[in-house]
Image 1 (cartoon, rainbow, N blue to C red):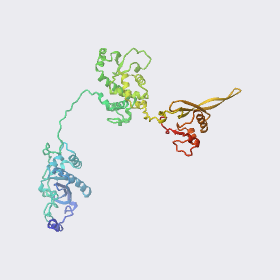
Image 2: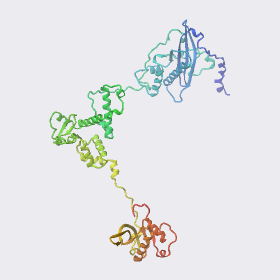
Image 3: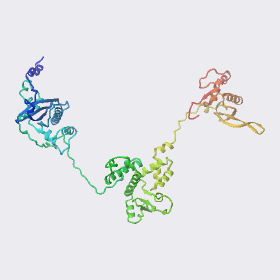
Image 4: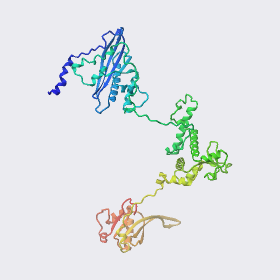
Length: 545
């Protein structure tokens, strides 16, 4: 092998001289006072690593440090910044700590983490700024298993995980702190590093930190339902149910909740909201919201006890305010024995989305029967729409179901007229025929008893002159038609072409008389062959004859 290949492996024999002490401490377990796990992590553009040491303190306050295990991973192929790689190393350290504490079989109450990246420590200790997804997910993973007080800064020269992120010759590995850990671990006092809170380093220039955005929060004291939210609904009942749910939720915050009603506390969705009282109240709220926006001046005049202004469209309706705060039509029907909503219907503007929903709702209730039925159903429900005639007509015109029901069917394009209809020939040279009937006729009279029978008629019509010849037949079978056809030929002369539909008697006659047709029958009768008669049947199931 070449020198370039042999040189990296030349020092592999030095690995035989390495020895790893398996006991974590060279003292009996009875002399152990406490144990602490220290994990160091580091990263480079080539690899990320984490190494763990178990620090054991005996009764004499002497420290014993043992190598536990380590993990090393190659850096991702996709280029990452050093802070991102250092953060991945911190996640690897947390995973290594979870693996050791769950499988070492010792009671370890303290775990300390060490890194030489102050940027990562700033990420972990951050409480004020938000990160982008990559950093945010990894910081959340670290904070889920550890606290910021467990993380410390260690200089790079004292970080044993640094050896795993860069190549170290086997002959030099024994002289490093990889198996023994840094010197400060052998001190019995608290860690000299201290428990500092690390701030973010240059947060305005860090690409991993989301920029701060200034927003303006406006608080209104008067909370009102606005009708522009109603445009999100496509049906009247879906809007009513949505408002009923809001009413039910509002009641759950203000009213006393019993044990049986405990699930109905706060924001939730349940069937208890769709009671009759809630649905009626939601309808009143919707209508009150619309009237408050569209007829503000009129309502203000009426609440002051005045009549509406002369230029108002509601002047002729004599509007009044009922006890629920809804504006209704006044009129002179107070003594009429009809329902209150029919005597004083609610006034609604014509051009409003909720009005359109109401018209659609009552139009469907009347089974799409037209404008008059829809208007009548609206009046019976106690609703008066300003300009109802035009508005209802517009809604019905745009109704898809009505267009389907009342749409004009398209007729297929007619074919060209046959040559027999256009050529000048003697009468009944080319004929079209059909059968109509039956009629009940009296065949004989015997002492007051009338014997009846059914009769049909064969209609022969000339295709050029439109002359008509009628022959009576006794039944609809082929033999009766053949007799009528022979009588026709005897009177009107030979026929060259016959057009008809595919009646069973016609088809049977063609087969019986052996007339050439477009049915490809064989054995043509000699007499009819000499006459040159051809029978053409119309296509089956055709729209036009």
